[in-house]
Image 1 (tube, one colour):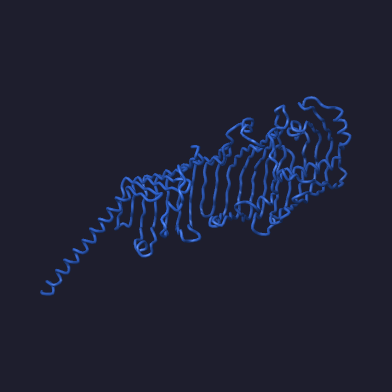
Image 2: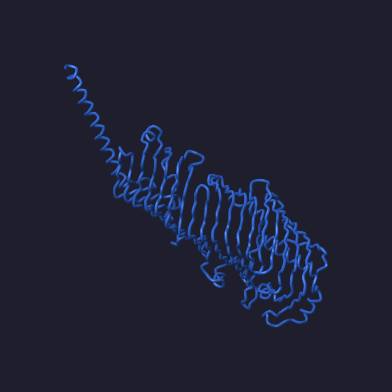
Length: 497
C-alpha cells in the first residue's frame, strides 16, 4: 500500500511533465502554423489562408498558399489551392537536418516567372548556413499552369495544364548532382513559346517520362507574312514555317543533361513539313558558316544519339530574286532519312541514308558519311537522281534565273568527296530531249539568240555511259546546303556540256 502511495506522486509528476510537453509542443505548432500564414525571409515570402500541422498524421497542409521567390534577375510566383506534405520523417529532420517525407502534393498551381524590378545579388537571397537536403518519395503537381513574362510584358511561355509526378526525388545543395529522381512523368499541354520577337512556337502536348519523351503537334509560325517579315530584318535571314506531327525520343538520359550531354537511343520525327523563304533584296551579312560536322561537334549541348530518323517529311524553299515579285520555289517531299550514330564527343563517323522526291516527281536517293571528329570537316556523299522532267524545275529557275527548261533526266549518279575548302566528284548521267530558253527579266519574252547559243553549248541528250569528273570550291560565307547545291549543279552542268 505504501508502495502504491509512493508511485502516485511520481505518476502525477510524469503526467504533468507529459502534459507540459504536449501543450508546449502544441503551442509551438500553433506558432509555426501562424508563421506559415505570413512568412518572410530574404528574397522569399509565403502567405496562406490556413496552415495545419498534424504530428499524429505526420502531415502539413497549406490552404491557398501564395509563394514568391526572387532569383538574381527574375522572380517566381506560385499560387495554389493547396500544398500538402505527407509522411514527414521528424527524426531525419531533427537528427540529420534532412527534410524527408513520403509525398508532396501541389494542387492547381498557377506559376508565373517574371522579370525582377531590380537586380538582387544571389548572396543576399540565401543564408550562409548549410541548406538542408530534401528527400521525397513522390512529388505530384496537378492541374497547374505556367507563364513567363518578358521585361516588355510579352508572353514568352505558356503551358496549361501541367501534370507532374516525380518519384524518389533527392535535392541536395551540397552534392555535385544537386538533384536526382529515379522515375518521372511530366505532361504539359497547349504550350506557347516565343523563341524570338518574330516567331511563335505552338505545341499541343509534351509528354516526358523515364523511358520516352514525346512532342505532339509542333508548329513554328512567323508573326508576319513573307513580304512583311523581311521589313523587320537588317540582314538576310530565312522566314521558316514548320509543322511537325510528332517527335519521339526513346530512352532519354536526363541524368546526363547536367554534364551538357544529350543522350538517347533514338529520335523519330514524323511528318515534318518546312516552308523556307528568303528575300534576296535584303543585304547579306557575310560571315563564316560552319560545316555540318562542325555544327554537330561545336553545339552547346553535346550529343550521344544512336540514330535519328525523319519520316515522310518535306521542305519547300523559296527565294525572291527578281523585282517582278515572283518567288522561285523548289519542293523536296516524301523525305525519309536516317543518321547514325550522332556522337560529338567520340571518334565516330555519322552515316546518312535518305530518299525523297523532287517537285513531286523525280526520285532522289543517297548516302553519306561525316566523320564528326575530323577538323577538316571532310565528308563523302553519293546521290542517285532519276525520272525528273526538267520543266518541273522551272518553278525555281524561271523566276530566279530567267531560264526555262525542257527534257528528262533518266538517271544521274553523283559522288562528292569534300572538306572545309573544296570537293571533287564524279558524275554519270543519262538524259534526253533537253532544251533551254533564256527569258528576259520579266520572264515573258525569250531571248532567242542567247537561247540558240545555249542549246549549241549544251548537249541535247547524253546516254554514253561516260563518267565525268568535276570540282567545286566552297563559299565559306554560305551554308553547307549551299555547298551541296553547288556540287550537284556543277555535276549536272559537267555532264551536259
